[in-house]
Length: 191
Ligand SMILES: [Zn+2]
Picture (cartoon, protein in one colour):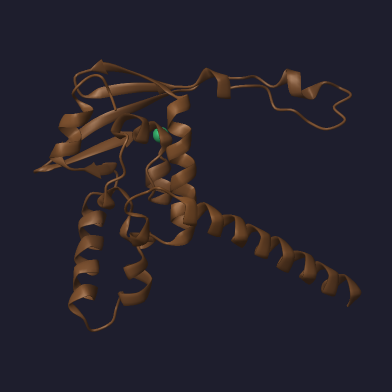
């Protein structure tokens, strides 16, 4: 009983602290379309957007880029590491490949880190290339309207469902981008 109470208190405190942190980050966010997305999504987007500039990019073909940050590829550090296990970890230099895909009239950027495929939020590698977050680059599930209007009897709900099926049809193609943004990406210097 005692343990449960203290554990609960601790959980509540950690939850509140992380909530406050999230709140501050969201309030201070300069993302122009932040009002569209849920709070957690804006928090993650900010972080990914800020990280983008640590990456180097090179366009290695007309429709593909390589993205890397070797400074982030370092040995892990452990507390009390008497056996120096941290130094024995193999460290691989990560180079991500971002490809442009075209389907019908739509353009997509796909990164081989597959963050977007897993979470529905564009990764720092793609943001390094686009330098911009368009509304449709974030999956509809992270939009505020999704949680509030999905499935109710409204025009908005129908639009959300349409957007979701379009998303499903294009699953595996990557992050959708508009023609305007694409031509910006293809015009050096990037960003
Ligand atoms: Zn990526």
